[in-house]
Length: 527
Image: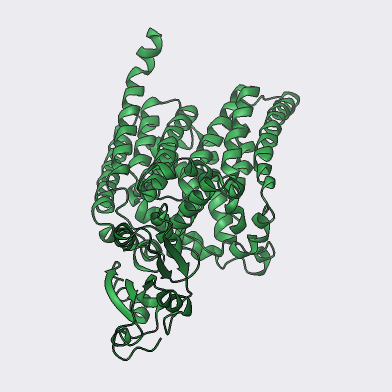
């Protein structure tokens, strides 16, 4: 024990400090960013699944794996703010990824300092910092992904059955979280490259055969875990929805350049902006200085990054930063290895690049936790999370108003119509209204030209009636609100669209969440 403390005490202490800093930074103003569309869906699913045991496989109805929602459903009812607890699951997933990066770095490069640096630069990177603060499945996938590779490397190096079993459980967690977990499974056999390969062909053959036999055990466990989903009634939806998200395999020879080239270019842009660029500089330094000494390790990490990103760039119909999050840690492992060099000039350049990366990251993260609209997010990410209908600005404030109305008269029913039937609204509002049964949230469609009949009927029945809709999705002019039976209670502005973009020209400088009361006492109204 004394020897262990002597060898690892300082490393463990520094690792704990890194994790503590990462945790505190991630939970600070955790709910500052408004709820995002997919967050609203996942949290609402978790609430429903927790309340109704027969719906534990509800995400399958939309072709989604349920593990994230399974984890969340046990905790979501125990906190007053469902968005906070949903995002907290991702915070802990992010901490798991940090630890996994440190473990894998030490396994590959046998250097404690580099392992700590690799974990630290991932901890402070805006790429991980942003998504570890979102109630999305991608941080959990990244965690299972890195640990699947860590345990696969240990399996290949030690050829132990217990490591193969643990690899299987980690892979099972990945494929139960999100479909791209299959890319992690495809990378597992490559860890054979990192084992001590015999020189004679005969010994090499049996060496590979033994490791592959262990990986078969891993794949069987992962497959059994994946097939737990067959207990749900919509298992087939996992496959039938595939065409909605990816191009068919024939796309490879029919049109291989589009969308591969723009999507792959976009993946580099994400690294450049949210990496940020300093991590790419460290990566280049590492490639130049470490390839000769660690060729197998560098090639392995490059494949772990490029293979899933290139595949998704080729076949994905929608391509955003979070879809490649699980592959990005391997870039940071290469970048952290830049500090392996003993050449004083290389070390100086690496430390300068590291300091530039740290300054960029801290500045970016500062705005993420104080004023996200000022953070330099990629255009598509800023649009989705801050500017458009997918951004749930004002939803929590509307829910608080409705709760106050409910508290004044708990026995009086309140009916709230929301745009659409699925997504930011109504799910974003429903997650906050859990436990207030007298408040009924109903979807009423999009592009409204008049107050929907189900809301006017509720008003005639004596219910307090409201409408929540984005300004971009209502076709009633502002001056006609009163004549249409709408009394504007409040409007909640979303982030401004940058001037010069197509969205600015077509849809104006900003969108608003509009909160109306449906009324009958205004002049000229005919309901």
